[in-house]
Image (cartoon, rainbow, N blue to C red):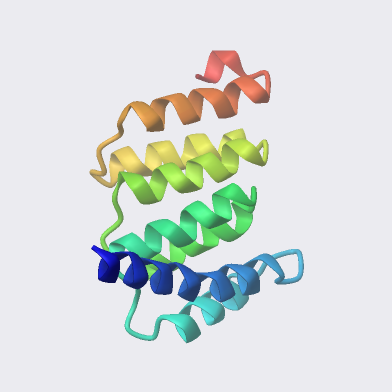
Length: 137
């Protein structure tokens, strides 16, 4: 109902400042800087849905380096990563022409027992296609 919509809007608004801070970090990105933003925003760690929204927001901004570091932060924090998390970061890599990183994440995903889906495959193929690396896909 209306309460659900309001709560969702509040949650959505709460990640916008985090995304802005991540997007405005100085290049080259340093893991410590990304981790500090995320630690400050989520001292107890984000829930799975918030994690997905952060990673997807970075992907929409083609911020592959920040998305990869945010995924690492999640892994180090022993948060359970799922295919939504990986798909968002692979998408960021595809949008940023980082096909090698997209393939690496795909391999990491499969070796970490995170199940690939149709979105994963199509995003990895798209990353390779955009880079002219058909033989890799």
